[in-house]
Structures are given as structure tokens and as C-alpha cells.
Image 1 (cartoon, rainbow, N blue to C red):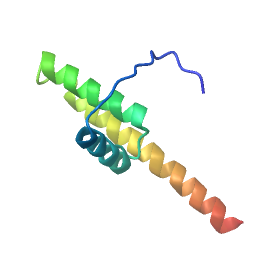
Image 2: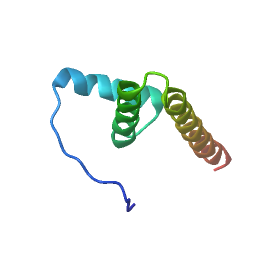
Image 3: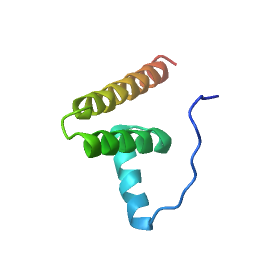
Amino acid sequence: MATQNPRIVGYVSPENHDQLKKFVEQQALTESKGIDVILSQFFSTASDPNSGNQSSILNVVLDRVTALEQQMVEVMGECVA
């Protein structure tokens, strides 16, 4: 799937990678989306503690609902088949 978003490459410590994996599993996100969510929260908090934080949290919740809906569609499809 093509995207307009810039690609970044970097290395993280094993501990941070473990935390990232836990976060994306809990939120049902890809690593890419998880990193984007984390960066959004960091930069909005770093510039102004009150700006964008609720928006970032709402986006995470909406992403999670979307992922759960997709899982339900898959499960329902398996039940019918």
C-alpha cells in the first residue's frame, strides 16, 4: 500500500523495542502507526502540555475500534464458512 508519509529508519535499544511491541499489541497497531502515535504525543506534549493530547488519545482509541471491527468481521466470516 503506497503512502505519502516519509520513511524513517533508526535503531532502538532492545528494551525500547520490547516496550514498542507491547504498546502496538495492546493498541492493535502496526509498528509504523505505533511510532507515529508516540511521536505525535511526544511532540504535542513537548510544545504545549494541553494541546493535542486529547486528540492523540482519541486517534489511538479510534484506531483500536477500527482494528476490533476488522477482527470481528474476520471472526464472523470464519463462523459463516
